[in-house]
Image (tube, rainbow, N blue to C red; front, side, top):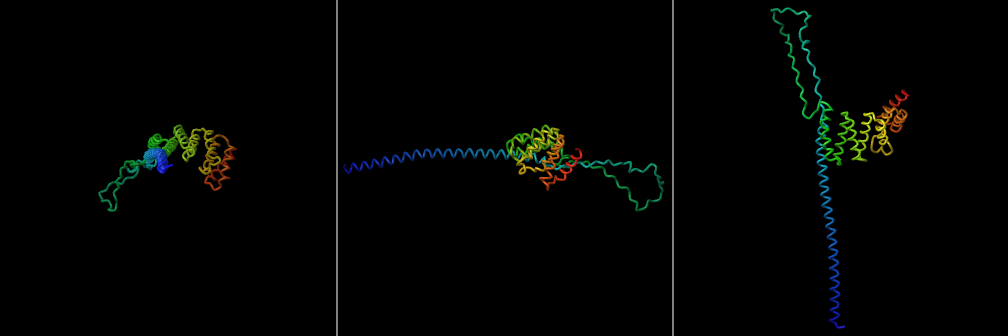
Length: 281
């Protein structure tokens, strides 16, 4: 083979190698660009979701804050109006009245002080005369925040506070509905667990003792110690047992408080309840 032919073959081999390398770089570059594009799209979507989610939580928090301004407002009841008995200030008809004389009155005799007219009470701005009035004013705002952003933490907090307000106002059916929504939306969360206790209290107030007992038994079972004050839950449960006529179970529950929580603030109450049940039995 001539030298020129060998040189030509080497050039062809180099050209083939370069072409192959270019094709590989092109193909890999296309895949790399596709991967980069996918990552960029994912980042944009994540950023958009994070922005939207943050904005939603911010708006929910703002509505909750407005509601809490009302819910936490001070209560300033009007002072008791005591009508002045002007008859007591008048001279007694039966008393001996000295005849007026021309003599001047003693210099040290003071004239009777004028009776000040009662001042009309004006409710201070930002306060309410009763707790009921305050809760009634806060309730629409709490419901608004809860319904506008039901899945956010501020929305769940607002719904829990609304349920508690309804319960305090004696609107037990509505309170029970709101508590159930809290439990459904915050399963495993602190408000979900507190909502269960709130619902149990509402059921007791409604006379639905068996329903309350089921809820309280769930809240005082295994694993509840880390999340709830079990001694307080047991006191509720013992009370519910007693109202339901299940005396033996009530006694066992109060005894459990005394045995398992000897340092509890409820021990004295549990002992008193236990003695009362023994006496009734």
